[in-house]
Length: 580
Image (cartoon, rainbow, N blue to C red; front, top):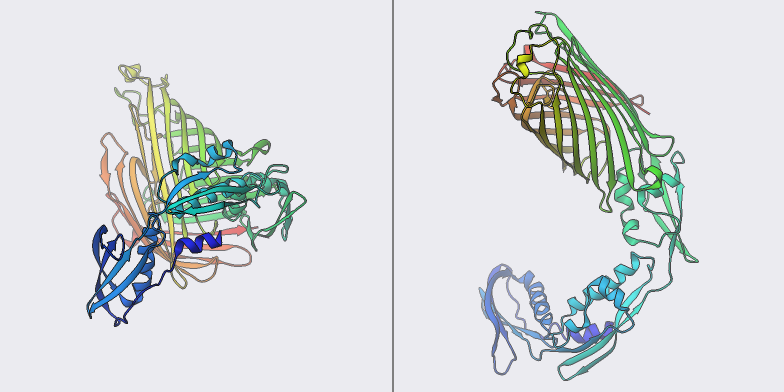
């Protein structure tokens, strides 16, 4: 094959090249059928280059002519004057296929790689087209148990301007996956890792799975690869060795917030959050998380989930979760959901989700004499939806580069429940069953700017639409994890778009100073009339890692329609995250 390739490339530099001075000049390129008749093959063109680019331009132009079947093409450079030159391309004889035989390649394999020998008959010889067919044959073999396959042209014959050949395909021995050997970190079961990687004992070797090991291992936050995977093949079996290091990512997180209590004069309001997040439970990649928040005097939030990867040794991951929100004396929401997801070969996450939501009024005081539905009511809502996720972060826990994308869409059937304590006239003319739609998305991006500087830019948004929307339906914004400078979950909105810009000065892999700016545009869903707001928050803080855990501190100021930009409205959040 190497001899054939040398014949096709002919002599690259049968050139008469004068020495051009450094600097830009105009090069006119002429394409002729041969050097005698000077019949034009292609329209001439003019480009601006410098002398250091000349060899690259000649190579590119000849490669274009070779791909048209002119295998004996050559080039000549003429130096006309200091600021201008000519490149003459002579195509000479065009070579065409007399025939290309499938050789010893089966009809079934030809169909799988999309190759029809008849499509070559009489066509100009183009080596990239042949190389693509040969590479596809080898790639198909590598992904189906034959990593030592080869494909080449054989019995090559050139007669005049006609070329004939046949394909010689050698699949090599069949190789099967055998075992996964884990070294360096023994608190994870090899069977779980094989399920996660899609590598199963007795299945044919698949090069795509082996190449994706690094990316798929980065999706596991509790460990990291300390060296490239080692692949051993012998006696028809493939053994993969992984050098792993444990990462402490299971957390116990406590955050304390101190802010003015606008409902109690000059008194201070203490808010808090407790979060327990356990990764790699039972050494099999499972996760248990519990999050409790008290973000004002009489409101609480509870969120609990259980994540079970590769259930029954299949690619399916199952995550049931429970959510409870008690909003002062207004309403209480309960939600139970089941998320079923699968990871693709490109580490994309595709999930299907079902949610059962129940919302009830806590108190009906003051609502007995109303003649239209209030901003909250009793209802039941079942959502059915799907989501897409793509994680390209370089590090799962505290990234310095890459991005994380998630998109979600749901549709649900809502049923309004009549409350016996309310006036029945409230429900007259109201559609008690209706459709409701919900869309949301997030893009979290990191750039390593310079030395220890990292820029984080996050965009996210959401939209909910339905005939009977209540406050208990819509999104909640505000607080440390969304719009800093405001009380947790301060804003009710059925449509919003937000952006967070954050500059981090990294002190170590787990410690940094930050300055930030958060901006949102949202539909304020707080009363009978919806109005737009453009709240923003800015401030600074730090995250400092110690042997015992991570200490966080953030000072933020925010401005909205109902909150001035002033230090006496500033929000201070500090807390401790213990990792183990």
